[in-house]
Length: 483
Ligand code: CTP
Image: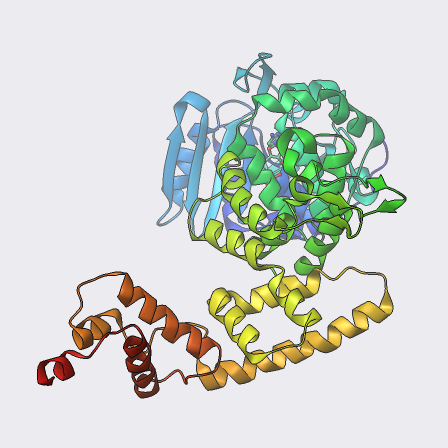
């Protein structure tokens, strides 16, 4: 084995905790080899601390877990006999126990055929070299690192590589193809060339993995510092067209009569990274990823206008629920938020390009509500032009819109607009049952406020209501009775 370059003291610092030492001594009592493995070990070397610790014992892990639970005050134990695993929760930590296993997978399912094995068997069946390291915690070998696949050297060289022939590792569990790309994205690592070409070869096998598990990985990619890295890799190995065809369809540039449009995939990824640099809100990041999703469907070439994508924002807004449903993303207010931002993403830009009128700014504020700041952030991120003059003009007007937003919000409180005159008041005033006239009057009041003709205030709005109603031939009940 190659000489390892790692800091032994670093290992000891991390594993010299009450709970890990206790697990080691319990394992000693019943004569069982015991190791800390997987992500916890990797994260020691990456300088990250984790609340989840995976332990592997040679022989059953359940008995060790049961004894550990009895010795830790206020710990809770869950045993999953069918899987041969157990979990102890204690002071916010999750200690997972499993016996070392030898696994092979049947070809058409993820359900492994499991047999007892040695530590070495267990390490071989793991996904990547950086996740296949183990540290012994038995007293006489406390802190000994077992790194049969040179995970340390791959960590130093920032490489994602499978411990075995990648065709075997990926065919055992095709989700690992997504995990490889996810780790490369999160850690800013490269995928080893042979590992990457195996992903290209095995990509169709992703079809046996549940949508939920694929989406879990996509979410982790979306939360990374530079999420575009993941999508570039997904595209390069052609997994993207299998798991996210709408996004893959953004790729490429078409040219008619010598006129091309910009590559919407590259643009989208740039917008996504721009948003990610400013916000951790993963749903705002989703809005960035999907903002131009309807461009392929709406793209037309016109002799006079060149390339157009009319209504791509509205069509995109309609596509979002279908995409969320298929990907098992939440069909709740998160979906509504993303769809709304996709639908509105052109609004600030249109404002910025035109003369900025108060009325248009008020309407945008009304439509965006509390999401106005996110919409403005998305809009700024959407400017990826290389033309400096264009960007300068945009910035100037963008700042003007921002300033107006603040002024108008202070003055008119449009953000969470509540009609100053309610439907009930309109009905009572004119003795009307619920009917379309009530809606028309309400709408007229709202428009007058948004257009700045009437202040957002009850008395002014009521005066305006009487005017509008008179124009519709309606009289207040009191007047009607007098007349
Ligand atoms: N593992 C694997 N194949 C998978 C999933 C997990 O071999 N499809 C192994 C890896 O050794 C991994 C360990 O199980 O390190 C624990 O998996 P998990 O908790 O999912 O991931 P972590 O590596 O801990 O990373 P993260 O917490 O970022 O998901």
